[in-house]
Image (cartoon, rainbow, N blue to C red; front, side, top):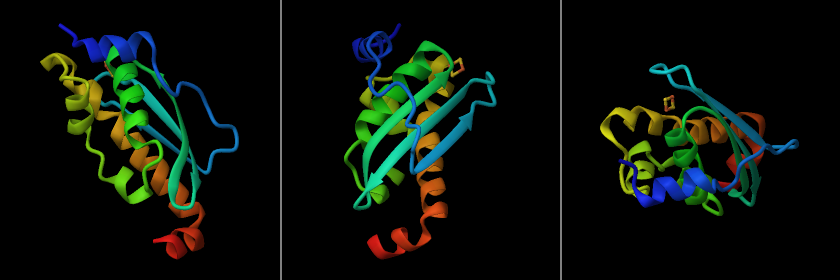
Length: 129
Ligand code: FES
């Protein structure tokens, strides 16, 4: 069964949507089920000022995206790079074993968005690190 946290983030997901003028965008696909997650970030002073997600996936993927975006909002890029898929699942009070693969998308998509930002803003990244 799903934890209360999973049900809460599934029923009322935080940070859903897109950021049209995003500083970085990351997309991650799940090889197990073919589902997809897209993360958009706005960066200011080396911190994640805003973050939104779009998930073409199951309820567990929506809940993990919602929790992951909450965990990194306001964090520095280096701190956000340290977020692991396991930490997101733990913050949600765990996931059923057969849904653990669904938690693999969120943190990886966030890391991809940060890498995209850093590739597009090499000077800003170097100056602020
Ligand atoms: Fe695909 Fe959950 S079944 S992410």
